[in-house]
Length: 243
Image (cartoon, rainbow, N blue to C red; front, top):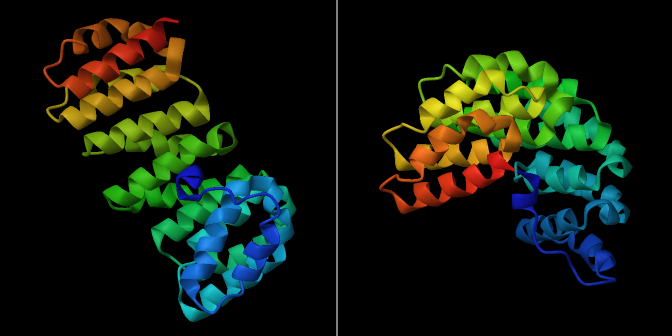
């Protein structure tokens, strides 16, 4: 989630220019600066005070806060001062994209996966399909630090949406590192009517590597799928599970 939201890294020596840009009048310029700082990771630490101010300003004015949240998250531990405004945002900004960004960034800054689980689990249990998919992706990104989220992810394996089941399986594998609960769900998804679901299930099995070795026969069969994209995903996954 965070990597996809970051812009390109600025050239050497440009951090001061980006800090100045965070104070621009145009909110689009401030958001663009945050996106570039996000790409710097911990090297963006000098911008933390300006990012916190920009975050608070965006909150007060009703502008998007996610670019600043994500940039602070990518900076990591040096951005601990952001946790106080994060707490306010958790109470005041219920939008699921904001909540998801807060969950991942909170973990990146503090190392505390429990708070992230408390944010993501209700989203996964009660949200619409987009919210569930976002929560599952965040669980996958956080990994074993969010192991307490396993019950919510296990419940989502029964969701009526096949793509939610697939992403919940990916999240559960990431937080629990136990292939047994997820292989059946993913193998069933390999037979879904939708090519996009078959392709994604194969990709997730590939991500699991040798832990998904027992799914090799199903992937071998899928490599003959009439959809070219599915064939490619199955072939690549078969290589990875067989290594």
